[in-house]
Image 1 (cartoon, helix red, strand yellow):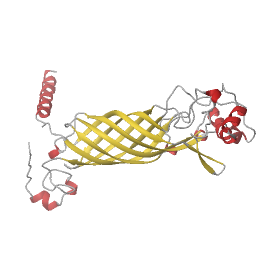
Image 2 (cartoon, rainbow, N blue to C red):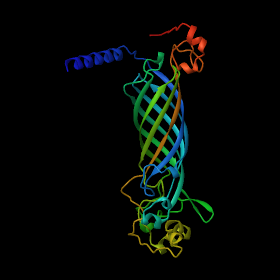
Image 3 (cartoon, rainbow, N blue to C red):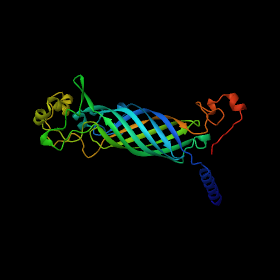
Image 4 (tube, helix red, strand yellow):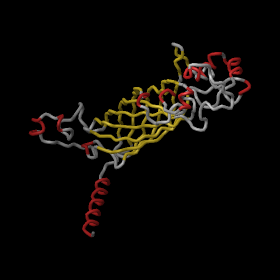
Length: 309
């Protein structure tokens, strides 16, 4: 037991000493993101529905304060969608609603890596990380009905804009979200990193899917917002192959107590801009992926590590 404790103490001392020798160097990182987007809200019971996953892409610029922490600015565009027809619950199948929406966001997140990542001379080339921040985004739910696509927000399917329902104002298509995520990043050379990230967005809206509160009385909705608002609000008849069920204003269409979510998962490729590193895709006179270096260079070239510290 004493030997084990001694080895643990030596290992901890060595790791602490190694960390203490890390220079307080900051650098800029610019990269791209590619993956898929997904949605969680009133029209789904699962956080990831693969049939409703759609491409997402974007880019980012990150300022690394040191080898552990940094501030990242993200711009990402993706498409989210859901349909009650994908559910195995009888109440959702009967409701028979669906939507799709493009989402474009700008997010500022603080990112923390542990144990840390320092790509210069590949001293610490691999690290998990987590991030959290604030995001603003634009969305626009649409649905397909009788051969045409309709933007749902202007139609007022839940009585938005009706004087008798003054608490139901039209929702904004520009909203805020709290982004947070986890990932891993690997520096396969001093300049280039490859990463995998899962990023969730808890939004401040319950209308990503145009579904939140209760139905509206049929006659009132048709009189105030038009026949199309009623047809897109209540689509039970399409499922039953009969007339719509006659819901009242107290019958719930969605769950107003929970906000909607959207998520991104994908790969990142980024470029480090660090003083003292060579130009080019992969440096041949510094450590990197051996499989990318010519055999002659690996065998005969003398390593020459330069540092600006």
